[in-house]
Image (tube, rainbow, N blue to C red; front, side, top):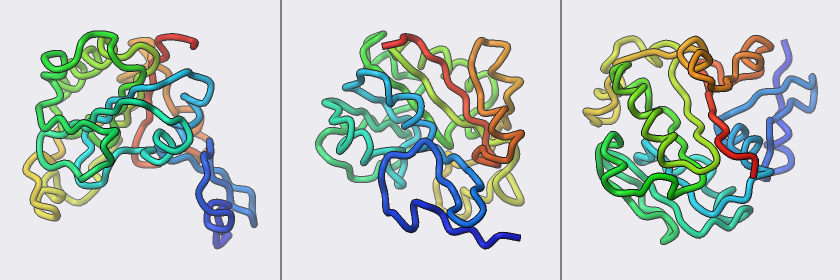
Amino acid sequence: MCEHVWDSQVEGWKPRIYIQCIKCGKIVRDFENYVVWLTRDLDIDSVVDVGTGMKGVVAECYYEEIRGIKRGYAVDIWKIKQLSPIWTPLNIDALRLLEYLEPKSVDVVQAFGFLEHLEKPDGFEFLSIAEKLARKLVIVSGAKTLHGPTPDYKVKKDGNPYHLYRSTWSWRDFEPLGWETSREHDEKGEGYGADVVAWRRLSPT
């Protein structure tokens, strides 16, 4: 078995659509890789990141340093990491986003590590809200299984009462709705692993 050495470890950070082992050529994709891949040809200046929490915005450096976005919104019902002034914190329930932002008011809505903490009907409601907010792209992830031994293990680990696992997701939840998914990458062993990534392209430019 190869002891992987990833190109990102050797070359340092830069926008990538995947990372690759320089020894065996294996490819894997994390959330930021999907963001770069799906937005690289889009003209974007505004982003909503849902479920920001204390880890921060996914692809934050890419959006700020490479894409130079003008406006960002960091959304979480619990705590939000201190971010640069580009990001306006919205400490709210994401299902109320349309009370704070106008329809079609941002280019990209993204939510990683978020859907699994909602009941399934609320998850689908969020997807609908995200499509109403975004002009160009919605991209999300959903846990395929519990990321731990019990639904409340994250609650016990970090004290966040909203980290309870309430649902699991697969490509079958998204594709009938017209969303694209990471299924092909997952089947080749190149996807994020424990999560399905799904996206809806709303505009080609």
